[in-house]
Length: 109
Image 1 (cartoon, rainbow, N blue to C red):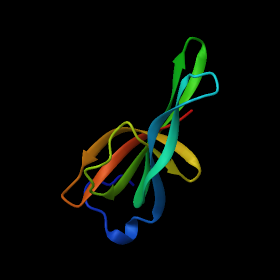
Image 2: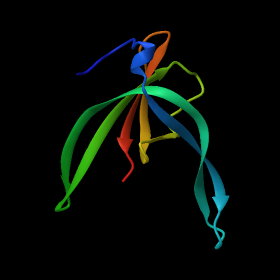
Image 3: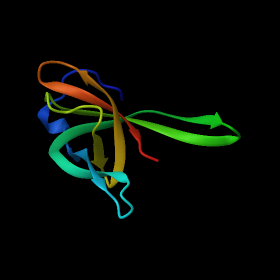
Image 4: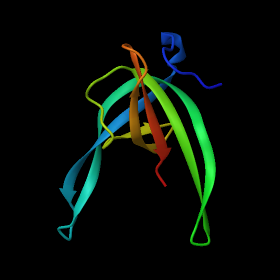
């Protein structure tokens, strides 16, 4: 069931970790991203779409996830989400009302 807008507090039953990247250097002096916990919040999770893309004779599966969280001003699309031990890129942040917002995410492959 697809929902838009306000969710009741009891519906935010998934614990997610929002991570931010910092730059560090590997043993060869090359910059690499290091992910650290930015915030741990409650969310309402729902799968948005799932489809396969054919590119250069290879089929890639793409899964999209919508996470509704309490409204915040300090999250951006350079961050990622750790949900159920898998990582999700934040592709868009959509305000739904003055209390909630939706993070549109795609799975990190």
